[in-house]
Image 1 (cartoon, rainbow, N blue to C red):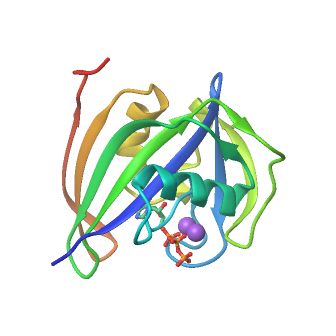
Image 2: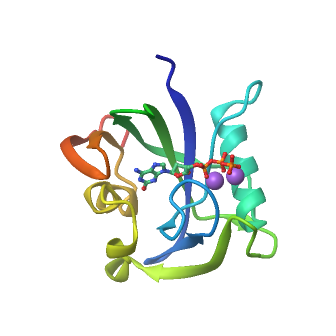
Length: 154
Ligand code: 6U4
Ligand code: NA
Ligand code: NA
């Protein structure tokens, strides 16, 4: 089966990260970073920049690739490429997909209103520590996880 490829982008400053409340589509009602499916003909980085613009109106030049998550289990096997940035341009705006958009302190992340796997790997993302995660869901429940930090490039 072909995996769907997604991006997930976290805009950060000091000890805060920008999260949006998903008001449409997959994960509706949950807080998350910005992102979506990589489209045919674009690179993963291009897809990440496009999704950030579409969902928050922010422009970004460089993104740091901080992790890869693969989700196992039916019906959606997917791979999510996680990026961070400290440098954006333009005026932050809510979108049809993310509203409201709020800065959250690292020690005040709303994990109880996020995907259940978020709390497992956000600590690495928040520290810009490269990580690899494999998360297996059965229905809405996590059945198995494998998460490892990977410091080779740092
Ligand atoms: P449409 O509505 O077709 O434009 P698109 O924006 O391309 O959708 P979307 O929003 O469905 O894609 O992408 C899902 C987003 O949710 C991606 O950024 C990846 C992220 N995501 C998916 N599963 C997740 C999970 N289990 N935990 C998590 N983020 C997840 O924290
Ligand atoms: Na999206
Ligand atoms: Na989108």
